[in-house]
Length: 371
Image (cartoon, rainbow, N blue to C red; front, side, top):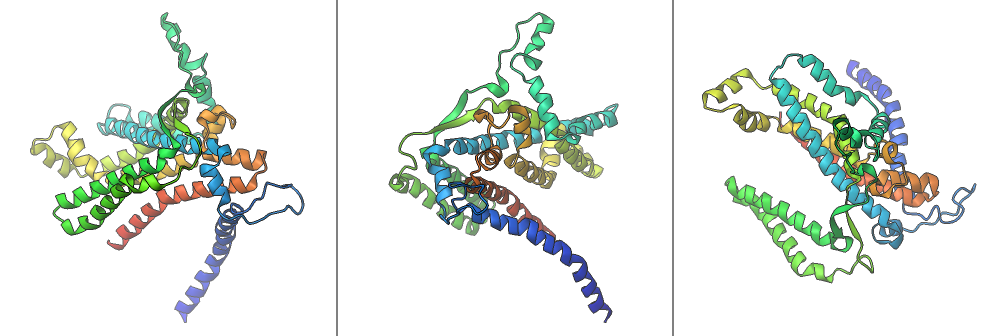
């Protein structure tokens, strides 16, 4: 009787949260997905009873292959480079700071607080500060004048120069190369560990991807009737610097906690075996920090995919060189009243974030169940 009453109380306590979650999260996700498959925004979008017709995946086709949506495709490229450089930069700088503090220098508490302070700021404040610092005719560029040297001329967030350019038409083939490389690495790793049975599936998949790259890709019709060049805009460098400045302290705190959690006996045993300090961190500490690195990559990755306020504060919504899908979604939805296309961009961002978060959640649940 008591167990039944406890279960009833638990259900009554949880039910309001479940209802609110279902309405304000999952129902809105479904509503956004449905709107993305309509033409809301084509005819009188702000009317009391707007004309809304179901068009299926037409909006997604326009986003990825429409002539008028080249900005969205460049935004995806910007997001890719921003995510890779932001995550790797935050991890690298955070690990370096953690190793320095792990040496227990004098004033460690002061430096730990100093490195963590940017994390307490909002992206709007960070963006405003770095917009002033990276002004083309001020800030960092005029520092050399203090020493009687000519000023820097780097354009930072206003540059329109692109590097690592590629044709959007070649994206399927480039993706196939990356997938084949990953599958080949998994195959090699399974064989190296003496588990050839686990190498069969990735090996066959590698062969299939390579065969499609050599023969099948020639049969895929071009998405656009002309070459569309995209690349890494150097203007994003300024935004990457600002983002790394804000989040490197966060990764420093994660890594420092992990380093302090390594038993002293393990460190002493490594030193007895002949490891110097560099080898100690490389061969002992870093392998033990893999779970922390994975968690940091997931958190930083999903932050970078949906970044909005930092870009908005530093360069505004109309600077295409530093544009991101979240900013374009704002422009299309709240400026252009193109609600269906804005919802389509939101769904693409949702899928990208889910591709990062869901594997991590599955791995975490598997790890907990194995304990």
